[in-house]
Structures are given as C-alpha cells and as structure tokens.
Amino acid sequence: MPRTLRTARLAGAAAVALAAALTLTACGSDGGGTGPAKVTQQKADSPYQGTVLNKHFDKPDLQLTDTAGQAYDLRQKTAGRSTLLFFGYTSCPDVCPTTMGDIGVAMTKLSPEERQKVDVVFVSTDPQRDTPQVLRSWLDSMGKDFIGLTGDLARVKAAAKSLGILIEDPVVNADGTVTSTHGAQVLAFLPSDDKAHVLYLSGTEEKTYEHDLPLLARGVAA
Image (cartoon, rainbow, N blue to C red):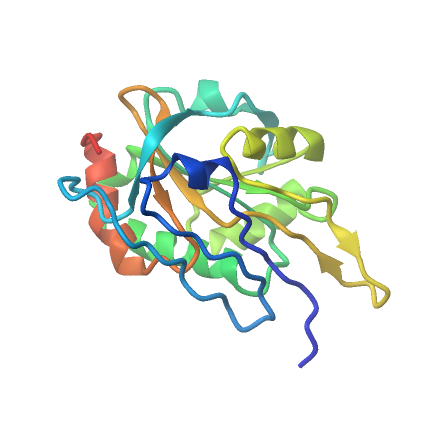
C-alpha cells in the first residue's frame, strides 16, 4: 500500500529541557507506525512513568474553536486542571489515532471522579480539513469528553513552538493526499501551576498512561 501520509517526530526545545541523558530519535512514518524514542535515564524518584521535564513549560496562550463551534481559550478553560495536550490531525494513519486511542483506553480505567479532573486536548495541525464536525466524529471513537480544537494554523504553530514542538504547513501531494509533519509528544500539565511537568514520547504504551493518569487526576507532583 503506497504511503499517503506521514507523521514525523521532530525534536525541539522540549528535548533540550529533558534530563541530560535523555535521547530522542527522529523518524518519519510510512503508515506502519513509528518506533519508540529511546530514554536512557529518567528521574529516579518520580512517581510518574512518563519523562519528567527539567524545565516546566507554560501552558500556551491559545484561542481556537472547539468541536461545538465555540471560541475556546486553552489557558482559561483548563486553568487549575490536569491537562494532556497533543498536536495532530485526524487523517493521520498511525501515531495520532494510536496515541489518542491509548489515552482513551487509559481514561476508561479511571473512576468517574478521576475522569472529571483530567482534560484531554487535541489540537489540529490540519485545520483546513479538520472542521469542528470532523474533529468531533474522530474524537468520539476515543473519548466523547475529549476536547478538540481547530483554527488558525499560525496560532497553532506558535503554541506548539513554545513547547518545543515543531509543526510544518500541510502539503497537498499530486495525488490529492496530504502530508502533515508535526512533533508527536504528549505534554501533561499539572493543576498546581498549569505548567507541563511530564512528557510522553511517540510509542508510549497504554499501560504507562494507565499508571500515570490517576496521579495526574490527583495532581501528584512529578
């Protein structure tokens, strides 16, 4: 089957902010998935299985449109709440649905009370095609309470860049398919300071999210 789309993991400032011995691998997807990045060392005393960041990134100042067609201010709406943030697009053949699907499965393992304390936010890197309706339909298969945001790509790219995540403009290929290249990190923001403390690389297993989400729901320090 010919490759129609690819998702590349691009290491940026977020990689620099990790522990000194953390190593990222950058690769593209050919529709068969991507291998996990290599982590040679993590914070030994952290309760989290995700990678604990040395630098705590501010939540992006980002105003977009949600799946109900309403204005959504990321900082305002998720203030004081545990938040998982991921940038991707619905036509992605591999890393985006796999990542969001794994998070969705892990969320189902939480109690109703815990689920209400965690926001999962998916920001489209292909807003021209990812309308609010398309986003809602796609996200519903993973989590009906997942938040989908779409809108001005320049804003999305700036927000991602502030987190060390590189996003490139979608490219329409000769056969009409679309290539959207973007970083595939998931960032976890704690409610104590609304900053990103934990990072999950592409290839993170569902069991890691299952372990860490209850901690995030309780706002446990990383």
